[in-house]
Length: 371
Image 1 (cartoon, helix red, strand yellow):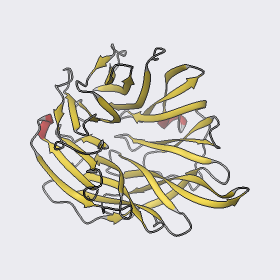
Image 2: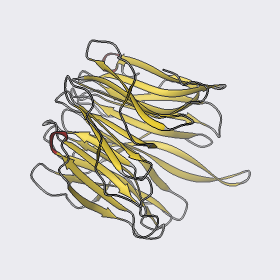
Image 3: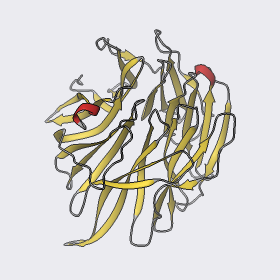
Image 4: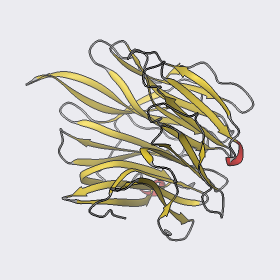
C-alpha cells in the first residue's frame, strides 16, 4: 500500500479478530481527506481499498475488532464531530453515524471497542475551544445502532491544569469496560483508569502511573489491551529531564502496567534511556493470554528502530524484556494487533525520500517469543 505524489497517508491502524484483519488509515489529498480500509478475512487475502467515511475527516481515527467477528472504526470529522461505522460479520461497512454532539468544538480524539455481544463503546475527549473544561465522554451503541446513551466520566479545567488527553477504551471478555487517559497535574501528568462492569456504573478513577512533579516528570500516551483471561495491559511513556549541553534535555522511557480491572497494576520498564527516547508504544493482547508490545527508539529527528516484547500466557514481563529490532529507518505510526492464538501483526509507515509506504510484518508470537 503506497500513496501517490500528491497524497499523504496518516493514522495507520491494524486490528485482528475472529473475523479477520482490518487495516485503516487516512488518505489526505489536495481535494479532501478520507478514511480508507482494507480487510482480510481469516485464511484469505486482503481485498480492495474501500472509502469508509463520507464527510471530510480530521487525522484522528481508531478501530476495534469484536469477538463476534465484527469491526468498528471511529474518527473526528472536520467539524469536530465523532463518527462511527460498523462492519458486521460477513457484511460491508455501515453508513457512518454521528456519536458526539454538534460543534463548535476542536477535533475530538476518540477510541473504540466492541464487546462479546457486538455492542460498540466509544470514548472521546471534547474541548469547546476553551469555553469550558475538557471533558471525557463514553457512549454505548448496542450492536452498532446509535442509542444516544452517553455520559461524562472525567472533567478537566479551563486552564492547562487538569487537561485531559489520550483517552483509550477496551472491553474484557465479561464485558467490563476499561477506560484510561492522561491528566495534567502540577509539574507533569498521570495516567488514570475507570472501569464499568456489565450492568453496573463506572467506578472511581484509580491511578495507573506515578504522578508528575516539578522536575518535569510526566506520564502520557497510554494504550491498552485486554487478553482472554481479563488481564489488562497498559503501555505509556514516562518523560524525564537531565542536564545536557544546552540545558535540560528530555528523554522518554516506555512502561507497561498489567493488572485486573479496578485493581493494582504491576509496572515494568521496556525501552528508552539517557540520550535516546522510546516513542509511540503500542500493545495488543490475545484470547490465549499472549500480549505483545511494540515501541520505537531513537535520538533527535534521526532514524528509529522498532522493538517488541512479549508476555506469554500465564507469564509476566521481565524488568528488562529481551527485544530485537523489527524494523529501522524513518518510521512512524506503528500499530500492532493479534489473533486469538497469539499471532501478532504489525504495520507502520516508512518514508524513503519522497515516497511513503505502509509496511507490515507478522509472526507467531507464542512460538518465537515476539515479533
